[in-house]
Image (cartoon, rainbow, N blue to C red; front, side):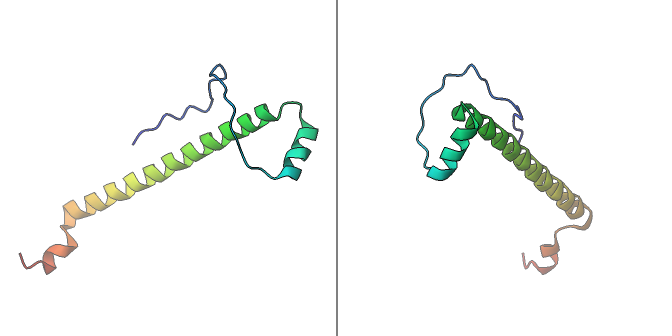
Length: 87
């Protein structure tokens, strides 16, 4: 499972309006700190997506390593269930 870990987004991509439900007080505070709340949210969202993709890749690598380890064990020792199988 390979993922594209592009840490950036394409700023030239078309923008579109979206509806979010956010804490009114928090939005007011944020607006008082920036002239462009949309760009701040876009940057934070980009950072979130990058981190989440890295975490997914790390989990995927951990699963692949565990699977490989189990397969090595199984090929050397055979399946644990074999000694209990009545087939």
